[in-house]
Length: 107
Image (cartoon, rainbow, N blue to C red):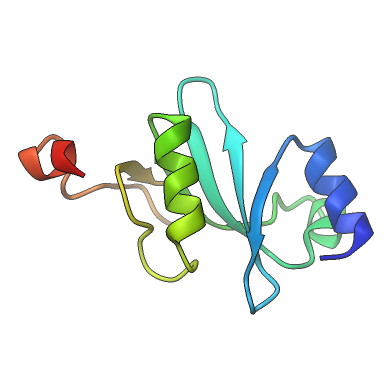
């Protein structure tokens, strides 16, 4: 991650959790009623300059603690762990299959 990327993340109020070996970044963003756990492109500053929000994957969590725990545990592949509610990645609008079940409440 370049200093320009770090500055762009800070300006956009993205809390960077970790950089992946691919150069992509896992970060958190506070939404109105939830937290967004995202995989951002490794060249975030350039993406933003080109009017793209830089998100490759986006999962919504109900609480900050759930989102943080998932962000530290996740490698950016597949679905993240924990109690994500919705997958709002580009081209997706998917509810967690476990949402509303006892399995979801136990996680």
